[in-house]
Image (cartoon, rainbow over all chains, first blue to last red; front, side):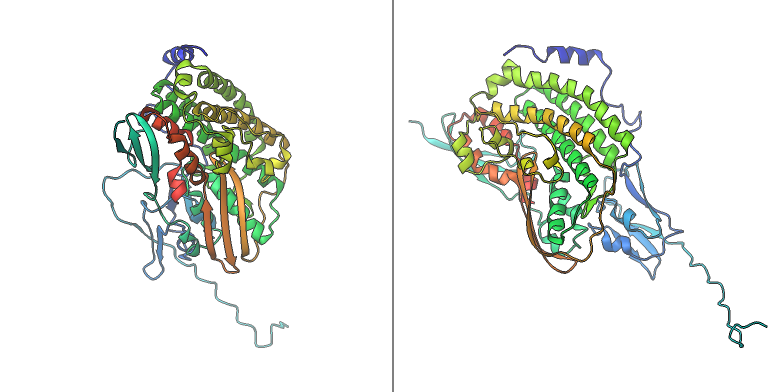
Length: 133
Length: 359
């Protein structure tokens, strides 16, 4: 049993610099793995819909006919699942959080600009069955 | 004899981080009986299991609780792995152990801060949460999330901790442990804390055992139950003994948690020393067909996940039993006969996690 057990720590704390950051003057601490928000590269998305299918909170919607990729930032739980399953790696996780909002600004709709590359014309087999003389 | 009155306590109360309602039957300032009512934050997470595929349900299982999220995810994965007979690689098991212990430290330090706050010891509250920040930084650096780690998956873990990061984590622990021991000194020896907690909310060993108390609530009453002794994940390869206190009062429960944080530091050191090289996951083949109970030690006690699959991608049933539910009957017992001013301290001493309890 003792009195003023905290006194030493309290006095040392007053002499030290603050433990917290003066945000937003000093940027928030992030690490390379930090999950902030999902961003898409619309030029690479092939509209396969895997992210929509696997999203546990149903925040992503891919409309193939309209070529749009949309996300509801208030529904997204930033679990990284879509980034993991994307077959063409067009989704990435940014370390910065999406900004806070005072009212629901609706779903963020992003037009997909991916253009399927044309296949090179198939070589017609020779009439002789490919046996060149 | 004065007449009895009923004072409502909660669901919104400054000392409660989450909503639970207690009807306190008082005679003068003394509590004669406490009647709890729950159900304010039920979210129906167990029903979602039929709507999500079993690998994706890990994300939902993790979000059952905002504090011990990693252990929820891990217990669910253990259940699925047991049904599917998956052999999880050793490295993944060790990584799970390390993250479990970090989340235990973060949960206990959070609780210690809240407890100090309930006692009116603001300075100690800040000191505890400052130390917790160190743990959260490590979790964010290694998993990407501060409280929702999202690093457990069916068959292993999502990401590895590189060797040099692991070495740095272990070397940083010595500085952390020094600060932790200073904090423990205050929690265990300060006169004002002892005056508010010693002999308050006493739960006898027999009551704790027969009422099904779990975790630090049981261990504070001298019941040496700790599921880590069953050897799930990599705990079987660790040298580990549960922390037990005999008095059964609020001070004992506080002491158990404080000493467990220090024990967790030791467990992390052991795990980092023994972790083998190798794969971190195996790919699950097929779908779960069968049922299983999986148990793990949460910071608050025993966590049980039950799952049942029928061979499809969606599970048929999931059931989660959390330690707060089992600790409620002992809480009602502790509250009988206490002073009204001690109610916040006693309620907090079981570390109630209501969001987790009601799912």
